[in-house]
Image 1 (cartoon, one colour):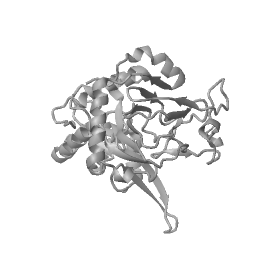
Image 2: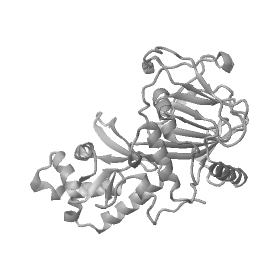
Image 3: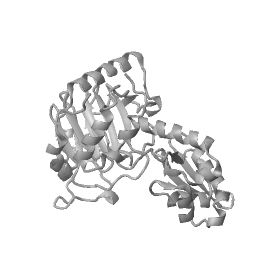
Image 4: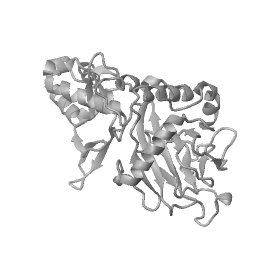
Length: 364
């Protein structure tokens, strides 16, 4: 099953110039039917509803089960890569949600930027909604949202109509596009079923206006191997393999294993406690409880940039050759808690390879 009907190369220049794109009738009919059938099932049975991510009086979210076709995501990753000038081998699927907008959803909602992991957002409307528009502010406030959560700018006046509407963009986020300095003029895109909108989700303020009662499939991607919600199938494969190797390897074997930062590692924070304002370091892995790490752990994680061996990273973090063995236990702990993953020599991190593994299961 294909995602798109168009050749990404034909629109690459336009996307790179504007950082957004609307392609009329750009969605493959089989995908549209598949997604709409899944939407009907979600509504009738409540299956895959993400209760923790519901926004009251705005929208519900359902996890989108991917097509069974093992070529679907690799082909989609290549399309996104060609369109946005990103390496398909680096592309990670960070979200796959069906959004169902509440019947009472505001006609002029706050605009927002997606979390950091949403480098590219793909929106596919599933039901006709003639009045709905996707609003973008592509010419100002273009700094990337570096947080794990969305950031918002509300309407300048909650009573304003969309035709007269502007949004309160924070001045400290007022990065302007050359030649359009301070241009807050919104771009409104009319996307209906069969159409697709693709845009830079973490750096463009956006929102869906007059959206009450509508439904949209959103697929979100990045080329940074980030998957904070654990929704890329390759993340589960990588994690399972990592835990298996951690359980089998001796300390000596582990020293020569290659490791990567976990796609679900979201942040490391330093907290000042009320106990004489002493500090502690904590790491947060998506879906897990925060856990305390040491300054040595932090040095180790900061030294890990690409796929390096445990030995190489320890040496880069300032551990001497004679003391390498005594630090393996801390590396093993970081792996067990999910901050890092151990990988096989032949296993390359990448959506297109992991999805072809025999142990990946797809929703039907």
